[in-house]
Length: 109
Image 1 (cartoon, rainbow, N blue to C red):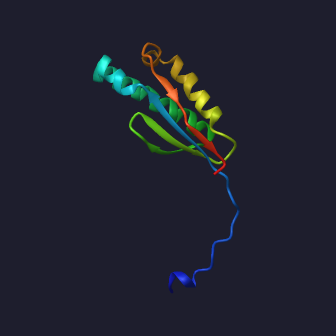
Image 2 (spheres, rainbow, N blue to C red):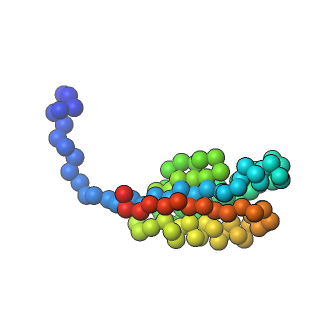
Image 3 (cartoon, helix red, strand yellow):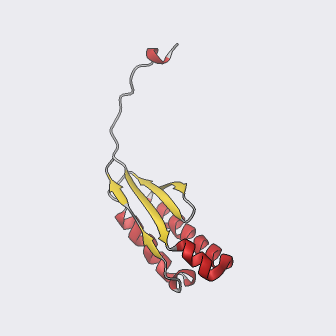
């Protein structure tokens, strides 16, 4: 059997939503606040992303240092980004530093 013997896949088209979340200013934050505070901040960020993504059925496709790539199949990831940002605003490690969650976004690819 060769690849040409395999019939083309027939299935349902599924739209995807992608979100790229990033802690803006994280390198400067690390320089100014040190490694311990940076690790605590990154841990809080990852915990928030995991918590919200798993509750909403969104897959974390890849961790990107101080960022994450999310893939969802329903609607947009704007709500997910908003909920992560809300969780982070309640974290003691995230309140003090001047970090912002940036979220370049494209839906329905």
